[in-house]
Length: 243
Image (cartoon, rainbow, N blue to C red; front, side, top):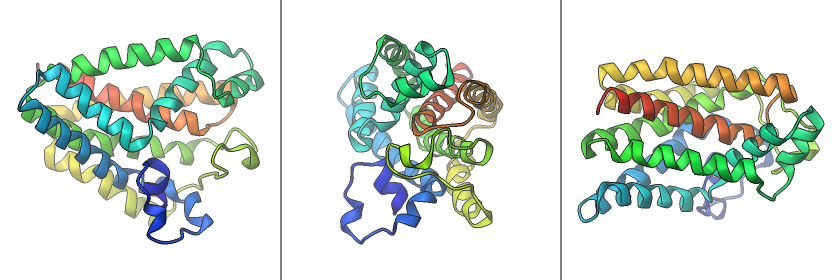
């Protein structure tokens, strides 16, 4: 429940009070949230594609996901671009990323991201694209969640934007995350699509290396950047083997 409360705008917190300790383990439920965000995105896409051109349908489907999540991942991506683009030191990079204002690197980074993502998705046949969305979203969230097992949190716990520092996954965490992250790919991936996983893993590794060298760990903004850039690399590779 904590994962859905943190990653979406839906009022899951109204259903019952969530103990603070649950938020530290929320990363384990990210792939499960991917089932919801992927389902909404795919559903809106299918409905819009019945009446509208592919590019418009994709844009509206992505807009539905942005509304559902409050654009928190995209906010993290823009902060990541600002921090790593404009900061020269660890302290300056963290300072820029914490600033709520968006800078030139963030604006340009988001523009390039969407200019690449929307045509990539719109170029795929509808049935292929629906399968890709349903499988890639949870898989990308699973990949991004692994940052907590590799890097420490880069700031003191009290400086976290949401007041929470994620704990590393244990056996029970993997038992929750892996099925939700991998099952959609097992069900919907075409055999050639599995070649996208090493590509996304390479992107993940490069970003992890950048974070370690620059700030010595990760932040919430880094999680958003990891998720969206790994997801984009998966879509690009699937597109390359489809179109």
